[in-house]
Image 1 (tube, one colour):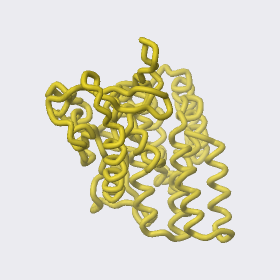
Image 2: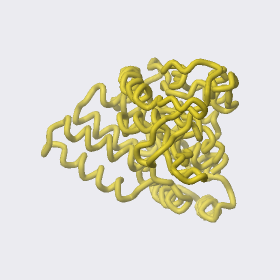
Image 3: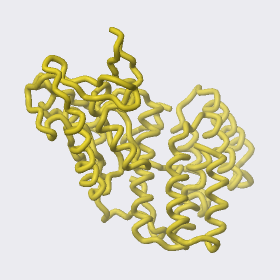
Image 4: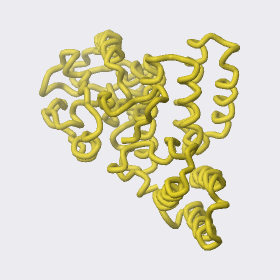
Length: 327
């Protein structure tokens, strides 16, 4: 894992990131039919680097296993949760539970959450909402997921189904570790700490959003003009919003070009030509991101480029997850 020392961020003695998760994804037999939806990547691979906090809203609200299935009914923006056969309305109970449970989860300092797709409680998007017509609209959001995302707006969230996409998986996990670092930095607020945090995240921000890269730079530069608490609140919101933006090959290649500028004069003509070609090949998506990043990392160490050594961009998440091998 990539940790930095003396920058107000995490070190190796800190606990692992803690993430909420739909309990069925861990293999717990909590679904309406008594089954589960265990996800191999989450339970075998990602679990080596995080601690899971399982939640099953249906069980915790008192529905039991096995149980009558429920669905969302009514308006897209404010649906009710109704049992399919009996017609029992679980809406109020689920909303009351969500308020209480989200308060408990907030106290655990979560760094992310993985929801079960399509669930009337936990689906993040495209959940079926039944109206007056026979065909349901796939534009809803599960009641618990909606409440959690509203109550913890900066928390990285994703559905397990979308994590099968390499780009979405890489983005989500990158945000999880970034948010974990940010929460650690928040616990010891200081002007110098925020400057250090921003400095080591500059190229990660640039890869996602040049607009946020520049606006957050201006915010940090004007630290003395606002209260420290206000600046931290604005920075955290902007930081997580920036990382949610897709880091395209063009943006990554732009960052790699910037980094190469720090040691370009040290390279031989052949080395420079090779690196330029590799960055170009990545921009054209002929090779994965890990190839140019590994070569850049090699030259950073070889030529002792101190400013780049601590850039989180070079290792934003555990290398064992091999996320950049697939984007």
